[in-house]
Image (cartoon, one colour):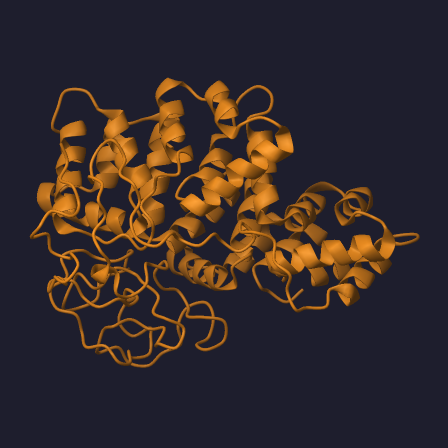
Length: 453
């Protein structure tokens, strides 16, 4: 049985901040690519690395787990010795840092009272303050922003003979989810027409698909993606992975609620009817929304216990205990999975990714790798998913549209993804998209990734 949280003597409990963990901060990039840090001494002896670095920095090989500091703090890593340089993605102080780590829990996570549930299998209750829903997944909000000029521009672009596609792109490609909702409301109020229906009647092809994805907003688009992925023969497994895996509990609850409201049946019932037995059980764990909140701490004994559970479920036995692996990767937060990944390799001298590839196959293998890679470095993972949509014979346009639109809602996320893409593939994401798309479809995708159109 796994160790429970909250036993006396655990490092990282309330009143016992562990000395081996560094302060929160971003993980460093390769030397020479970020300005020097401000306000944090270099960490000493962290046992777990942050999201992936390429290549590892000199000196301490295990810097802090990737965590954004509060807005007023320096956006750069708590590491000394880096000469000033322009970061990847966005310039400093203009929309967030460049290519850095995924957001982590807020500082001070080790001061929270320990959770009361055990940390093993079956899944524990999440601890710490709940992770807030992503923008567009929470309750409706009224924003202090006048959407009427954009609503008028959109109506003019589609009224009468012909359509001004560039105006549609200019207005819609750079708005956040709350602004999109405001524009839809203003459009209906002013013209007694539905923006989505007008777009469908005036545009075609993947350009239309991209505009509809934007106008629906991230949450409604997610539930339509899920429904279409499970509608008819076969299941678009990559779509299920994109929408459901590595989501916060708050976002998962929102997705299930809107799916029920839109299609009048539970999401779980459709998933059960579409996936094979063990993969179905994996996704039902995911849909259970029992993931540790981002604020839940990394407890060393719990990490070590998870590492041993993973070993005993895979390499340490004949056959594979698939559900143990699925349970751990579906109920731990990104910081915990990063720590598990590093500790596994340190202990057994094998990468956890290689173990999964050896022990699993098919959709379950791809789902577990998605969960692992997203936790290790979500920006590089997103970059690889975009490349996957464009690689090989023919562009997988449904994936390119859904992934570009998904990442574009968060401008800082998109800047980081573009930086990661440039680093891995040695070309800009924009140039790659230009080579795979054309016309208004191309201009919309470029607008979504922040390129001038």
